[in-house]
Length: 240
Image (spheres, rainbow, N blue to C red):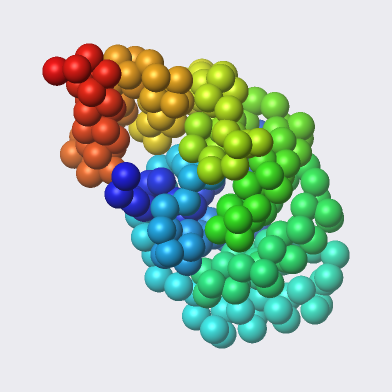
């Protein structure tokens, strides 16, 4: 399977999280860039599928990191400052340093689901899928109805390389909950559901769901590639 930006950790759609989490700082942009893991990991990553995360963004300038370090120095108990620094570090590929900042952010404010998502996103390219799963589980405890967390759980269980994390049945359950929580209006969440059907070898349902996603986001190459994958699997299974 060819890597697409859609299938790697990248941009988290913050708006979908704000319905249940309103702690985001005004210093933040509308979207939180964590990192393009497909580039950093040298290939496809399988643990994330952020809602509406196909765009790419420029790496954080070094002076931004200096600014965030100063913010942390001035207020070391600010969870948002640690998360901001972690985001900037991750954009520069300093994943181990970013990991420490996101860990501190979740320690200081364990109710902020965005921090748990960011932490999971940094664990994945480090080969720590179990830790990514645990982070998402803790985020889900903080907000059981959060569509972003539910979506990431579905994607991780559907695509993880680790046999202890990959679980197609759980993938389907979480993806269905994410679709319900988002009112079936988000193309990437529908794509996660399609991937979950694919993982369960329900290829016809995967095709139908991916077509629904493409009606919301027509022409998106990543979704079209997914649809081709599902159709090929259905053809191979039928022997035609």
